[in-house]
Image (cartoon, rainbow, N blue to C red):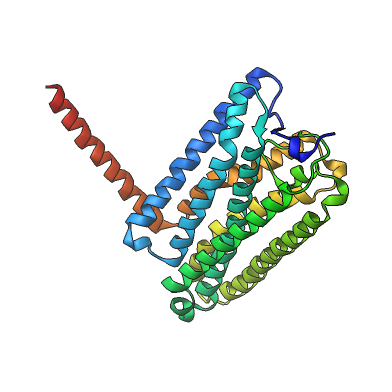
Length: 322
């Protein structure tokens, strides 16, 4: 038994017991993080530099790439460090910071996916009002409201979670600091206020999920009313990336936290946590770029520019050597 005032560190869940598997996890996480950093960095550069991509959907995609980078940089570096150094510890303040940023970026991801669903709904169901409902000022206001709300939400959650006395040791059943696992260490009689806050959070998340489902019901009804097959295919293809990202992100996260204890196991919990915290940030850029021809064209121009600069650099290097 320990008190939160005397805790200086937490023990995270080890990804593997054998040293060979720990190193394998290190290289796997390194590859995933580098792929996510490269892909999201390219999307950020393409949307920022190409004026053809200065559209509401691309603006929200830029914000989504920022959240993906934040998610990767919050959880993966510490997991890589622990696997490489064969340790499982994280400091008390480090755990609080990781919990805040993870809650912040994951909540921002849910908010942005909901806003992007609204963008698709207006584009297909109310195309004549698209410029009015989703002008540059409206998009900026929605993005600012989403970021500001999730910042206050994450700050409130973090302060409330770490204000509770922790009486159940310091071992977390997760490879990063997350609210439900920290709450398991708190005294049962003192965690009611955080439980109520989690109930409110679940209601908000479920509300976003219902809004997305309702919006896509209206979208599919509008698409089916389009007379030409080519028009239906084009309208549906604009929604396909969002339809691929939302189930991957929401289903794994909801199942991980709402599954019954009878089917819970350490290996299953670990696999699910990787699926909703690490995999989506790496796959989102690939999913969105595959179906967006303008984005693919912009990325080709960007890569061609990089190759041109490399040729110039190689020319000057050869000249210097001469």
